[in-house]
Image 1 (cartoon, rainbow, N blue to C red):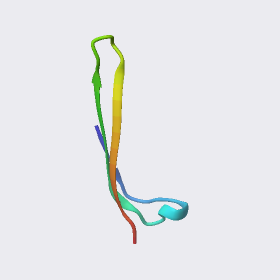
Image 2: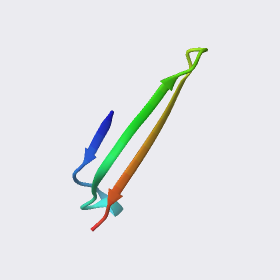
Image 3: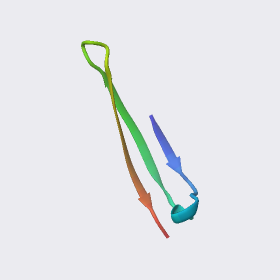
Length: 42
């Protein structure tokens, strides 16, 4: 899953970029989820 950043608030006003979510399910049905992002600030 991924999200496109088109605006921001506070210290992130005018930010653009992408955030992705990568996850997998372990044998014991636990979920490991990682979010990675690249934000460009004006």
